[in-house]
Image 1 (tube, one colour):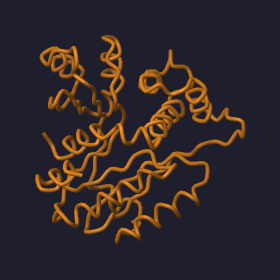
Image 2 (cartoon, rainbow, N blue to C red):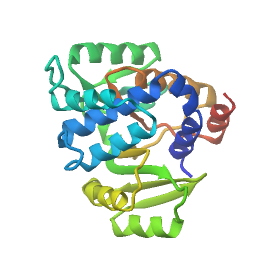
Image 3 (cartoon, helix red, strand yellow):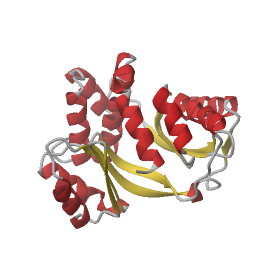
Length: 251
């Protein structure tokens, strides 16, 4: 199991604490906003939105919250402010590269907040393209295997053009070329699988490893960035060593 996957598993286990802080609702709302922005506000015509709405409902997000998020994504909110999708590149300290996917109605505010947190963590913003070459885009799906058979999920993924399928601790992860996203989304949806995570991710092609203490500092910066309202995703190229993963599990 990859370091990223193990880290994601650890964070899922700590989901209850995040829920108490309202972090889950915030993140789910962003997913709905992004899905509506990219494919329109009709779940019947937008598979990604349908999946995002299903995940939001599963966490008991109020219907009004979901509808507001959809309108925000389509620019139909009360204020009529159009949202803008932006990508920023930088370093989170100790040579770890980060790519940030943001959704904002005020790019000046967003870049100022991102720059502040990177600087506070010993990192910095970077010029467009100077970090991006260390990542590649890929379709990504993650979901519980409860009630599912590995062989059938594996077959579905491979037939849908997946590059990699992993199973660990009751969770399946599928990675595929970007152009296979809709095919796999449709296939999963057809058999009533609604992934906890689904979308286009930036996967590191050039990983770096940091000493445990430094790695924990980097992760704190990454988590601080993720908590910003305008930040949808933070992708990094830090290799998660066994020592770091053990330290995370013990927190």
